[in-house]
Image 1 (cartoon, helix red, strand yellow):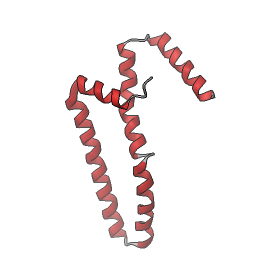
Image 2 (image 1 turned 45 degrees about the vertical axis):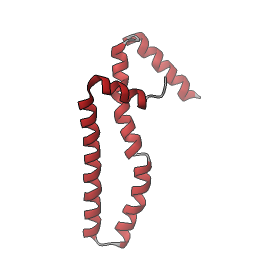
Image 3 (image 1 turned 45 degrees about the horizontal axis):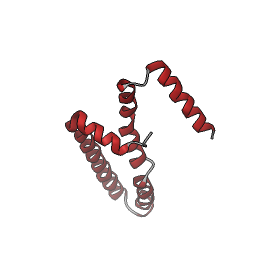
Image 4 (image 1 turned 135 degrees about the vertical axis):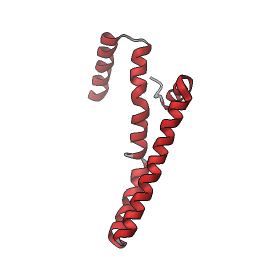
Length: 107
């Protein structure tokens, strides 16, 4: 409950300081994509699936196999993030607005 109240106060202060206009909206949108990717890759299904497999590789396999596994995962994750970045950049403003509406929380 305290978190909701503090979030409301934060929004009031930001609206008072910066105004409720397109620039303020752009500020908030700039954080939606990184936060979404963090939730997906660092806190979401990827992390839930990756940690047990990494533990298995570390305890039951050779170091060479562990290194190959980590390299493959890091490379794949890097390519996915690069593709997300390229999509964002290539879509321009119209695509950015659509993506942000899709990622938005409705408020």
